[in-house]
Each structure stands twice: as structure tokens, then as C-alpha cells.
Length: 218
Image 1 (spheres, helix red, strand yellow):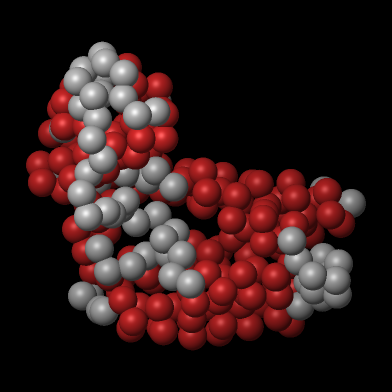
Image 2: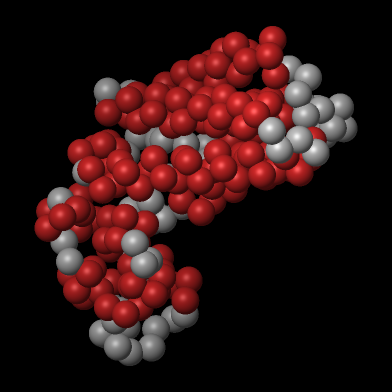
């Protein structure tokens, strides 16, 4: 869920005017907001500031981002569905744990933007802003709850086993995010971060193997 990056900000329209379309407006708002938050701090930037910097109307910003926090954590929805997507697409004979491990390592290989990279300013902003930390916890909780629902549907068991399995699998996902954040803030290079996260993921999922290695096998 790192910051949106680009060589230059997409052009927007004047406040209240039409621009190039919905995707362009939301991208411009998130990009402009994150830059302002990095410079001034999350609490010192208003929606009006963001709208002005992005060249859109204030209502446009709030329509796309009802929560101010989601201007920073703008890939939160994608994060919520990452675990369920991996489990839903697991291969024949593959367990939920194996699917999640394979998916994470593949995302490390292609350097998925949901995995912390070397944007120190973005990670510092999230770490040092209580509202962003709280929203990030909520996103992780939503991902866990979504995983419970998918596993219950897949296994036909909505009891404690499914809840506990989802909690453990989602805990690895959270651990990997915060480990990535720690590495970024230490000033590690992108290559170092992804190499360490790949090793950590393999070991973390491996620790769950005795309990969940055969769970929810397709």
C-alpha cells in the first residue's frame, strides 16, 4: 500500500470543472494528498488543500475518498481482497496455506505495490499518524473477516476451526507488512527488503504447516 508514484502528476481541472474522468480525478487526489501529507503532516492538510492541489472540486475528493485516511491507504480495498483471491484461486490439491504462501512469494517476485517498498516518507507518515495506524488495522481486520467468510464457504464449516485458521493466516500477512515497514524505515534497499520478506514469508508460513498444512485443501 505504498504511495502512488509517477514521473509527474496527472493534470486536473479547475475546482468544480470537468476533467479527464473518474480514474484521473481519484488518482490526482490521492497523489496530491499524499505529497501534502508528507510535507505538512496528515492533520494539517484539509480537503480544500487537497482539492486545490489536485485541480478538482472538494466534493470530488470526498466522493472518491469518504475517509481522509484512504487518500493515503488508497489500495486498501485491494489489500482486503488479496487473501481471499489467493485462497479462491488455489490449485487442485493445494491447501489454503500453500496457496497464500505461493501467492505472497509470487507478489514479492513481481514487487507488488501492496508490499512495503523503499518509500521511507510514506512509511513514516503511516507509522507516525494515529488515524492512519488505526485505519491500517481496520483494513487488516477486514481482510481477516473476508478470509473467514471464504474459508467457511469453501469448507462448509463456520465454526471455531475456520475462525482460528483465518486468524493465523491473516496474522502472517500482517506480520509481513509490518516487517516490511520496519525494513523500509531502517533504510534498507528495495532489493534487500524483498529478499528478506521472501525468506520471512517462507519461514512464517512454514511454522503454520504442522497445524494448517492440509487445511482447506481443494
